[in-house]
Image: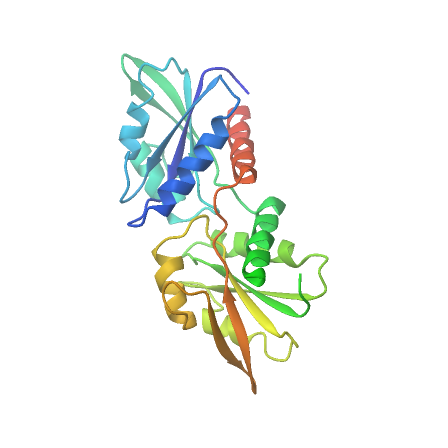
Length: 133
Length: 133
C-alpha cells in the first residue's frame, strides 16, 4: 500500500454504544502494524466525530491522501447517496479533493465490505455460540 | 454443530438491491457444505421474505431448531429491540418457541457479527482496490 495514507472509517452511528465500539475496534485493527497509515473514525448519524470532524482530524498528520471506507456490509442509500453528499463526492463517482489545513488533498471513496466467506465464517461462529449456551 | 438446524439469516433490507444480494450471498456461504443445516433469509424492512415469512419457510424441511442470525455488523436498535419484538423474544433474552406446522420448535437468537480481524482484512482489501484504480 502507498505511504502516508489517511483512512477514515465511516460508521452508521447509533443511539446505542455498540456501532461506535465495533467500528472503532475494526479501525484499530485496520491500522495495526502499518505505520504508513493513519486511521480515524467518523459517523454518519448520532455519534461523533461527524464526517467533517473526521476529515479535519487528519490535519497535521502528514498524510497525503485520504481513503474514506464505509464500514457497512452492503451498499445502500447511506453509502451511495448520504455519505457521498456529505463528503462532496458526486453520485456514481469515488473521488474528490478536500482542503486540509493549507493543502488540497485527494479523497478516495472505497466500497463497503461486501459478501465474503470470512463473513460467513463469523456468522457460523455466532450460530455455534448460541447453540452451545 | 447439531443436526437439522434451520438458520434464518436476517438482513436489514433496503430500497436498493445490494443489502438483499449481500445477505443472500452470505447465507449461501453459511450453508455451503453443511447438509445438516437449512439456511433461509428474511428481511426486517423493505425486502422480502419478511421475518414471519422466513420462519414459515422452514415448514416441511425437517429442522428441529431455528437459529436467527442478524447479519448486521454491530448490535443496535434493530437487533436489540426491533427484531426480537417481531420474533416474540423478550428484550435481553435470546430464546423462544415458534409454531411450525403442527410442532412447537425452539428459536434461538444469535449475536450480530461483531468486530473481528477478518472484517479489518476485508476493509484493507477495499482500501487497496480504491488506491489502485
